[in-house]
Length: 118
Length: 116
Image 1 (cartoon, each protein chain N blue to C red):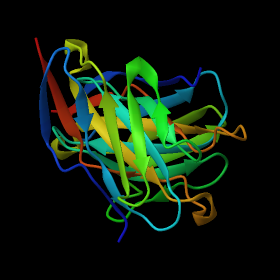
Image 2: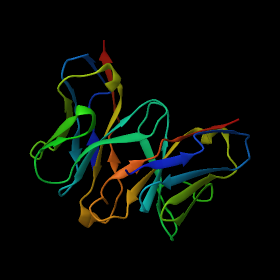
Image 3: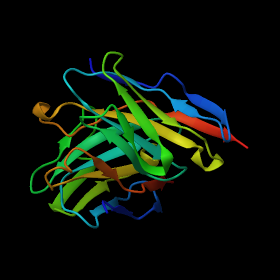
């Protein structure tokens, strides 16, 4: 149980294009999802908190117009990197917190999406 | 400021020997504590957590962790290391329920290398 998927697992795009990454909780409903970015050999950097049916909450320094987050249902959140540039190349990881009482403290992580912007 | 420290960037251990990966935290109240493992180019896999109760928590793949409130530590342990345990390990802390946040505070990660 508590499986989170991400799609795509890897994407290469040209500079200036937009890329959408999907995060799905496969066997549970998630009230809250998180989006992280991880640089090589570093820890995770929280980008934003996504709550179903409401606007995402962005961390300081994260451009909300560049990293669009939509949490359309209790099992799906999407991150769109708009007008991507090479410096956006990174490993993006999502996580989800179950809506079920007693399971709300644990984040379950997706497998990550490797984005390379040329 | 709230923080989580993993003082060792890397831990080397011989296969079959016990391993310890250290984690200390500075968070007010009674936080929730977690360990995750990350293999190359993969997301984080949940290993174990401490919410309340017995200070020794057992988790996946034979790992366990001991919560020490007085030392504000939550060290990860395994009695006998396997080469396949080689990975990046993250300690994470979530502030207490009354804080109203699900956000984690992550340590910087410790790379475990188990030598055959």
